[in-house]
Image (cartoon, rainbow, N blue to C red):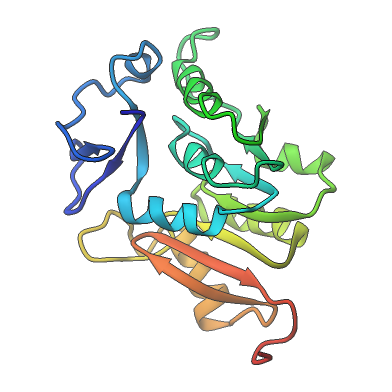
Length: 224
């Protein structure tokens, strides 16, 4: 049992192991690093399926905000054999320098899959983008959830997404039984850009629980 995903209705302790099983009780990431529990997802089982749908066959993927690495592992399992998954996270929320067990758990989980290549970028996303120049097939934005932070990630990184490429926003919509609020940064951004104002170059192509996928149109809107 490599990882655990959330089952709805949601509660803080309601995590079921992949394929079913007991609730996860050992919350600290040290237990995942020690192998006493699987790594814990911050997304639902349905979102997990959606992540893998859009990541399948992609050659260059980026994730902003890695946590224990479950979403990264989900994408690595299905991306192109020749692909590279760039994982951006400063792993700064740690009280004891040198003993960052969330980072260690994430590395152990993601590197346990040998498909393609995982490239770890231990920086804030606004720092990592300064050296970025590559086209992107898929990017998952799941880092800074403030209104300013998520908009900065969108402005910084969306320009690198190829035509027909996809941006995934996590915690970006309200849904029954969920945890998001209308004041959450990703919810506000998605509503403003893709529901109210509507970015002409982009289109929402799928929504599952809190996860929203927007695709960069190869041609203008309305073109088959």
